[in-house]
Image (tube, rainbow over all chains, first blue to last red; front, side, top):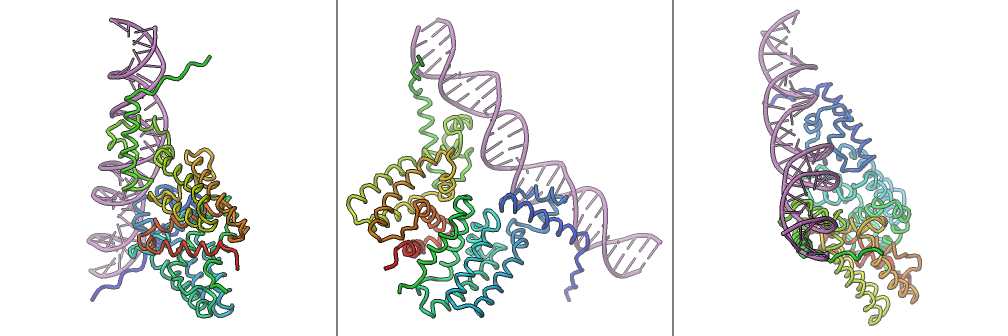
Length: 190
Length: 190
DNA sequence: ACTCAACCGGAACACCGCTCCGCTTGTCAA
DNA sequence: TTGACAAGCGGAGCGGTGTTCCGGTTGAGT
């Protein structure tokens, strides 16, 4: 029988945490393209250590974002239970676009991960797509949203709105307005 | 009196042309982030030569795209003269989104350049914004498009649509559909 | 033929992602 | 307690990048 894997060594766990703290700070400052060497330096950890804990950049990002996405998925269910369908959809979408703009460069990483099953972010993207898809289906059921909008359309547009906002501060100011414009396009004609 | 600058030396002109040919090919293959070393190599030119002719990557891109944007601006005027306002706007916007997706990574460069007067692409972006702005104003005059849409909104959304399309082939297939959705959001309610 | 500005090529520097391997350290059995 | 060994560690090293800089070359005007 396969031997039970030993518990994680405390020093390893400590290093992992240090890396996450350093990465959170650096990615918040410089975006998803922050230098991994800098992350290791700030964490006071060897480069090899960083790569062992997080073999790819996506792995690191996924660890950084895991909790946040978890909450967003739960939030979708909560909204579905408490708000009318259209309101639930728009509110959740708004929160998602804010979350996707958390780090500079994140929207691009998310949209790319949706179509790359090997990406560490793929699972999170999938969860967001289906969570949004449920809200979308409910709103379409009520005839409020065009029936030819797919969950992937929704995910792409939401990320695109986040992308616009993180291209320039000037555009970020217009962000809510653009959100309204795009959402209007999704509504069924009255 | 200031001496007339001498004519460009033919060897310099030849190198410039070689660089542009090589860059066009490489950027078409690999996107706006293609290695400048590779461009120089393919052009059989020293790296210093490339940087002298095109001090920044944007300079090179601008040289590559200059003609194309020129034509797009003229096309806007032509459409304004021959097609009804809404049709002119949507057709031109569609052509622009195709043009902005000419190279991988181009939408990001364009949207960034709009707010960076120092970028070599800034002039082209500005021209596109005003060209689109004229068509937009005409359509708004006719009550066809929401009055609270600005030329910058238009530019941002068009680039965002191009951005979606160049993130993944799967999304590119959906591109026309997304274009319709977003454009619907710009229309005034009937 | 001479001069000199214009032009050229590529070495050099600092940084990057990523791999690999010799050394250290925690853990557990004897 | 001690020894052995898996797990973990750090960083040198490789091949790539953008960018600067400068000694040599070349074309054009006198």
